Image (cartoon, rainbow, N blue to C red):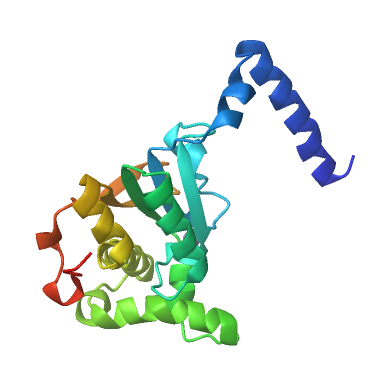
Length: 212
Ligand code: CO
């Protein structure tokens, strides 16, 4: 059997087992999706949102990219964000990085990853630049990368709060809450790093829209 055929086999088995324990499972999910959470995570295969949070189909709306970057010109991410916030009306947005992130380590290096990837990693380099004194003082490179992972998550949460999508939702329905988490590959545990509650006073006035 080819490797990908195993996936199709497992899928058949999974669907059959679901029906056995819950005959309405698919017909219920087919009707509507009503997730409470929107997850922005790293593409890393070791950090699957549903698996590490003990959730199942229909519970988390997901977007993933290298090193869970929130870039304010990313049409892909912002389409997903807008839909999650405006249409699905998620209550919580989680940006989840992970310790040992290859994207973070790559951004810390001086290696040329070729233009497209260099462009992507540049955003993380800028986070490093903004916290250079603190980061340079950490001698152990793995620990330094882990701290940059946390700072990247904090920066991304702040960037979400600066968007009109989020500010409009805060004004209209006092949600979503923004959570910055970092998952540990070593122990499987999530470290909660930052949180911003739906209050416009939590945002630098420069980025506040006053006519939403
Ligand atoms: Co990663």
